[in-house]
Image (cartoon, rainbow, N blue to C red; front, top):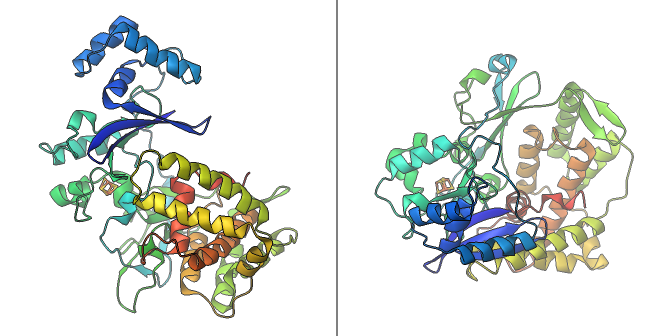
Length: 437
Ligand code: SF4
């Protein structure tokens, strides 16, 4: 169960996301205050006393009703949590990575438009205890849409304090986002004070045993929009070796054994060579989705390209996510509008003739698709955890869906880029399991 505090239309409330049932439950802020005291360390009297200290006066019968409603949903866990509430274990970088040369995606530059689109795009912005302390210190007098500092954060999951927590959202976006699109923490104390994940975004780093490859997450239009020669910023400027990469950025490492398909594994050196071949082929190919699929065929067994099962599974998940979000955000919410765009497109793609049209080979290279594939392949995104052929085939499918999205007039803004929106929804709104489905 995930609890997320929102302010929408000036009203403060908490949404409980019941992941197992795919349902949401809305609580008044005071009811959440009571529930946050039911952390397994108190009896009912203790919950009442602790909630009163938080300003939420309650009674035994109200506490009983609240707990009974959650018990009915199997959402209560007995006993106190066994995690340390303030300790985040950050992966330490292996010594060899510190000495490896850093190589940023060649020729890549991107221009952040500074409108805070990424701060409105994700369901949960995860903050460490240090991030929370810096935010409070940076904004001591600040109230987020009337919500005082004591209520800024909810646990990552469950009701007891957790090491990672999530800030309140205002009208669907991060509560720290100013009305002019700037982060209030950044405005007050600069980049150093920002949450670790926010200051690293959209940069990624992955060591393949030879070098640390620096790339970008293709979930924001600013990353995928091509920039004019000499404009925008390069990735990882001034980083020569792994030790130069700022600590806020996690350096992933490829596993010793790379899963190619269900029956074969290879070394990271194999993946490095295979990805290099694909990246070279992309610069000479016209249809990039087809090129991805063909390279997956060459890595494993040929498989007929098809969108059907994926479209069906993703359509089900996206429709459900859209239905749930529509119960607690305003009709003009950016993510809700993005979900409507995706759901509408997947609905059309249910027609076999329209699927075939979306997969029709293109005659010219699309600059956005090329940037997308260069980002994900150079950065080895997904290859550490999933079979390489699945990663490649899903890239091809995403490009086909994005081409169809471009034809459906439901984009939330004229600046939206279908591939960026699709990737943001997949990772940021729990739709990424569509492939496994
Ligand atoms: S903390 Fe700042 S940078 Fe991070 S999501 Fe919120 S507004 Fe954006």
